[in-house]
Image (cartoon, rainbow, N blue to C red; front, side, top):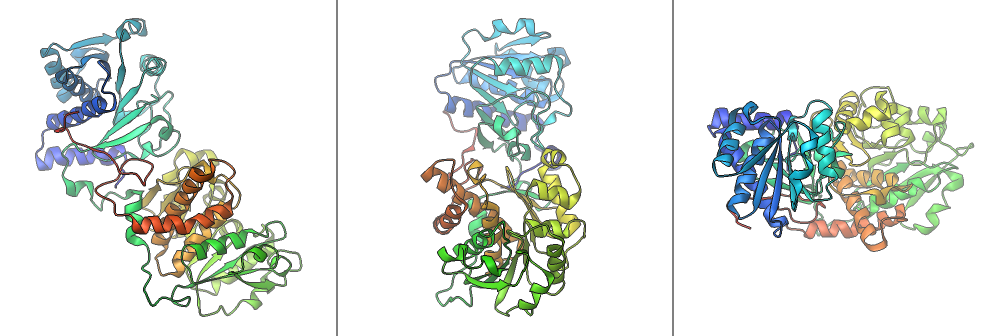
Length: 532
């Protein structure tokens, strides 16, 4: 499913209104009715509902929702920020219809009038600002948000919880903590980015009558990374397959301090289906972690200081023709010799490559990679790659990933919550919907890098390999959390779970669009013709 910014959503609305001829008032009617039906289904015993409306189109959705709830037998009233006389356009029309049917609208000019409005209320609907917010909340709007949060009642948000930037997920001073968010047409990307994602609660996508071809337009570069998409891009396994046809991965990594990292990557490559995995590492560590992983081949490099040296490449080059993908970096150090060796190897190969950990620091500031490939930075490594502070990176995870992809002309996997995959064109991106804090464990990044390399070896493009690996890696973490609890899951256990989630994905036959997290559960698509 596509994911959009506020500007992209506004353009879709304008196309529907100006080019297709769907009146804006009709779109608002459909959106408000979908919001009302969602509330009635979610809280069937809520008899008294207070809808908090802002002065714009989000408030207009709220007036329609309040009127629809009246028709469903609920006692609904509206709390309006400001004066009815200042409403305009479709919002003014629907406010007038609501009042004409006997609906009560309380104009709020100061917070002193608020306590009396909630006597006996079972549910609050937040229809204050939605995607239109451009500056931090202060004054009465901030007081309203704080007041709603302090009521101790469930809150249903229209489109986006008020106070959340719909593009970046940042809190604009104060933000509504919703129990349910009903977003209109397409999900906004800020609903999946933190801290905004913590304010969303359950997420539903409402069909409001926008043209289907617009919702699937290639002009929309953002998508959610979900099970249906991953299932379509996974490599086919023919009955005649053997280890040679499934590809070989060479992992170059390891050091005295991090002996296990390259073996985690090699195991992950095998777990996602690569035919062979070879670890090239300092000779002194090759028999340690490998002792429990008999399927991995090893090449011991001289590495007299226990870290990679440029001369070690003489043991590797020319590369075995059976090798189809490289994974560079797991467990390396930041020593200058490592940088020299990485540059020398990249200059001598056109194989698809995954760069992780200290291999990323080795190329920082060097510009486009000759052979493209996949970069897998965490925030610290991303800061080194594009020269930005960690605060700026986290304030705009999507923008940071796209910038890095443009500068290095590579697919970028920006690890974190959530992980962003940016295509090498620097325009298209995917927001992952799997995984969670269970992956906050040393070594899980090595597993991810190895999984990407494993898919590259099986013939997937860098973009497809990154997407498949990121989603399945997250699902493997989710599976481990469900079986073992949310803490203490080891990276090796995540690698071992990969075949199980891979099998589950291949057997999955999703139906319809997906918009409800976690991503392996069916979504709810709201339609206003269904009564609760």
